[in-house]
Length: 352
Image (cartoon, rainbow, N blue to C red; front, side, top):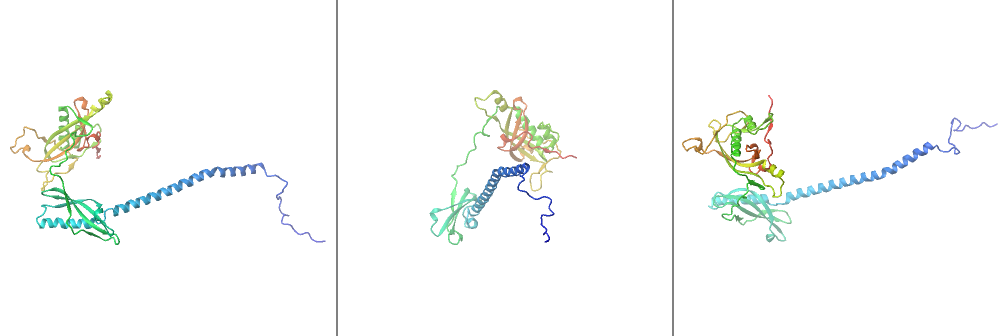
């Protein structure tokens, strides 16, 4: 009798059978997996679109930046050659008795000159501002030529052209000191507040400035001027914001509650504070006494009023205008008055 051959399934305790249906749990798992993958398809598409858009935007931005950079580099060909030619021209003026005191201020622009451009070369005119003793500031234009084939550039051998401002053509400043602000009625309270602030500011004492400005924050400090012997204050204009005719009472009260002032401050430096070169001392945070106020009654007898000092212009912000006792709460360069905010010049005082 032949020996039965061993089957690979002899040791298997269970094998797949076609007569047993797949369990419901397995079917639901397969369905959930399939539905989940289908549901993720829109999100994947959106993500792909976002990535592609970002890539396109970055590529376009980089390309645009490169074009702008290239434009800035090639916008003014021949600027160096033109400047050398103008320098040589200025030197010749001094040597040959030309424009007295001619001095180059700087380059102010360039443009292509179609009338001098042909099939071989492109002509550019470079403009330079030159200060002179007898004509004031004049604009000098130097022509340069660029070879289209090689890119070589050379300055024209012809003398540069000159544009002279019309005599007496000074541009007058607007009648209003600040646009949108109307001069306020005369107020001695404003003058007193501004003079008090100026004395504190030029005293070298930061705390005096804080007190004069009624700054409630004792942690604030202010930069001041030190080494001032006397100060003169000239209030040029005091104004409040204009309001339309149909403005409400609340709007009118708010506009009248604060104002701005244009102030000319003249300081006379003490002998110990002024350097040997005559330069004014730097700003300080240290203590000091308030300088004397130069009044109209001071005479030219060797007193401070007869000494020429340093005059500069500032704008100050005035709070509490409607109360009759306004206060300076900030200061800045001329023209900045409407944009000043209360105590914006303060900084945190160092702690000991």
